[in-house]
Length: 126
Image (cartoon, rainbow, N blue to C red; front, top):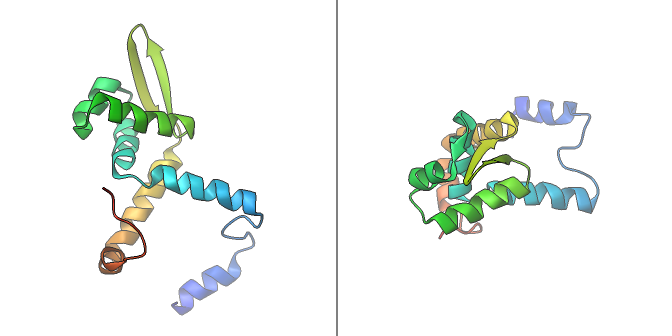
C-alpha cells in the first residue's frame, strides 16, 4: 500500500464496510447483482436513456427469457426501474451512482488487469 493510500485509509471516519454481518451480507448481494457481464452491460445501456425490453435483447444478443431474468434481478435490487405502457416494458437505471461504481471498477481493472486476469480464486463468467 502506498503512503498516500495508507493515509487515505487511516483518515476515514466511516468503516469501509458495515460492521454488522447483516450489513456486509447486503453489500455482498449488491456486488453480486453487479457481478454478471450481462447485467453490467444492461445497467450501463439503460443509464443512457429509457430502453424497451426488445432494445435490451438486441443490445446484449441473448434470448428474451435470459434478458428478462437479468433485468428482473436489476429491478429487484432497485438498480433499474420498469415502466409498463400497454404491452411494452421500458427500463432505466434508477441511480447514477451504480454506473459510477461500474466506471470506478473498470478504472481499477485497467490498473490491475494482469492480476485480475490471473486470479484463480474468483470464477470467470460462463
